[in-house]
Image (cartoon, rainbow, N blue to C red):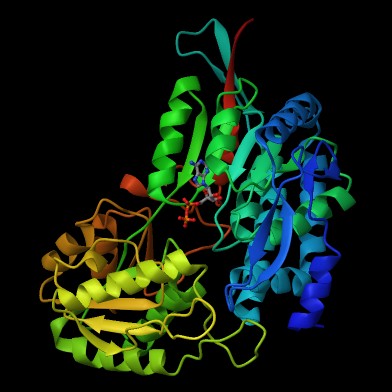
Length: 489
Ligand code: ADP
């Protein structure tokens, strides 16, 4: 049975809200705690322990100590454990959905979607775990053999964002644990509760002490600096802004740490004049409005062929107008609030700036007012290139539309950004779609499809959008080294 707000708060009251280090829940060494807010009304939901640098050091000690044993477990054992974790998360779908809704604000139905998606990474990587490969080949010059084996990189720091509190964690944890790496996971300070429940599930499944460590903190910079300076840490995987990713890459350089970076996007969504209009509008809703636009793969710039621009805009605007912003636990709500006041201010600024530069509002255009961090679902047209919204990641429910006449024009504009995460192209001409997709400078392309994220597909970006891939056959590679043995016979 699904939760209402009251039963969700009861769930929170029964949740462990400490740190999880070396197989046990405990308080921060300083006794510090940090508040978790409800973005729908700004009230405090609860608080969680705030890990100090000393706590992080205790966690890396535990992870390093556990690494030897964990890396030597059979891949079948790790696969079974991940599979059990998948089952357990699915069993507790209602609980996870309630926590996600409560701390992040997305409507319950969407939160349930994230649980399905997030759990799937555990199943996917449980299947991957049992398929670690090696090779055996004659050296080209003969005389000896080239043998390769895969080995875990070692203890990994996993830093996750607040927009998908479960899924962004499972796609790192699943891969790291499958590969045989011990982990330190740090959730975003806005959304630590979902991960507390996931950690509790690993605890119940008796994952060995030190293999999973959960260290929420509000001082991420101090924590990551201390951990990355520590010779025992071997890997950092980060999902978040390009600005922070770049800081972490600089820090990683000092010790030549392995890194995976899932950073910002500025997704183009291209609609050609021969597109299936129903599909394009449906895809646009998904690509733009999933998570209220707070997704790094969100469509950020709509480039629509001049001949169909008015029809597309009209239909998209009608769909936006029909959305119902509201509290996650209200069954009528179809779009949640933004995560916090800072994000609301940023979206407000971007739209105001676009209007000042000459863009026109079709629907929406301002904060909803009242409690919480809601912004009206908004469609803006005639966005000039001088507007910030044409270049910056919006991370909100705002569709910015411009038009194009030729394919080359569309491509040039789509690629005129430092980012390259996801792009979308709609046309009935599959040859044009593929030709266009090949030239689009993004790591992922939705071809007549507004949703690309899938545990079975390699998620990741090019240019300033990141390094490495998560999910797919590639995801586990981020946590493996190749050991080469030259064997004289
Ligand atoms: P946003 O601005 O959307 O919150 P961030 O990139 O700031 O995105 O945050 C993503 C994650 O990175 C969060 O878990 C946050 O706590 C963490 N983070 C922020 N700054 C740093 C830093 N200097 N070092 C390590 N992690 C950081």
